[in-house]
Image 1 (cartoon, one colour):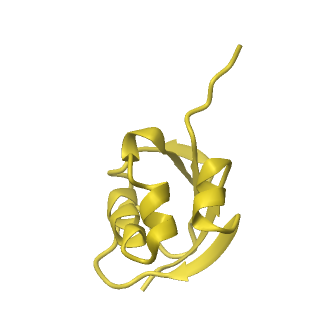
Image 2 (cartoon, rainbow, N blue to C red; image 1 turned 30 degrees about the vertical axis):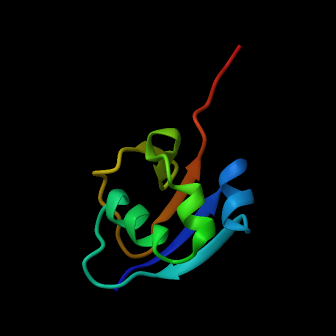
Length: 86
């Protein structure tokens, strides 16, 4: 089982209800997409945060990553809205 540090930024943090957490994942979760699907089952705040996956960006160990990116024990995963510049 993998233990992750998960960070939430902006409106994701507001919907989930906290800025960060440590989670021990059940067997079978090895990608960001699988993590998101599992988080959505945890409570309504997660469901609201991840209801539109295309609006959520992610990083694994501070490197941008897609939903097919592998995650493993000790990783830091961050979720945030799309970044815009001006």
